[in-house]
Image 1: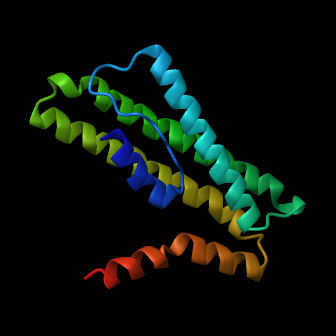
Image 2: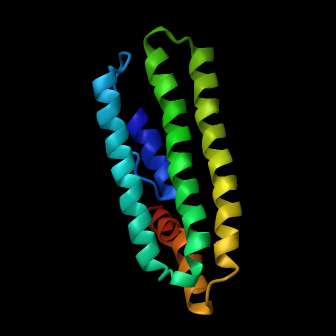
Image 3: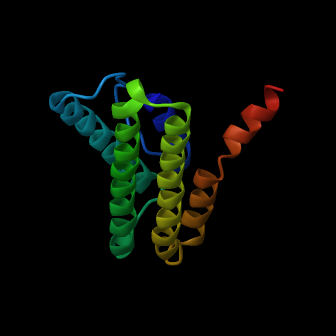
Length: 150
């Protein structure tokens, strides 16, 4: 379940929160390993996006805010997912719905924070960078694949 949610969220955030789902309460060692994988995935995505958008040295202050927001969003989402995973063995249907709502809310809050941070960067980007950002965040490929599969 945690991996599925992470994959869904990564389609919007582009954040790979690679974690191993566990039906039981996660042990501290597994959580640290899981957090390290998440952090590595986020850093990899940040690096790729930086290169793809051709961030200039003049844009670095705005970029740093975007990158930090991505890191915080990944952690916030993981906390919501970890809470759900820890309680899954005793959760009722209502508990499951509420915990999923918490995950969805963390995701929505993260997207809003990312939009604010990215807006500041976008405002100082060149036209070519904006075109690349527009294409990157449009998810056109996803929509085209979905339409083709119908």
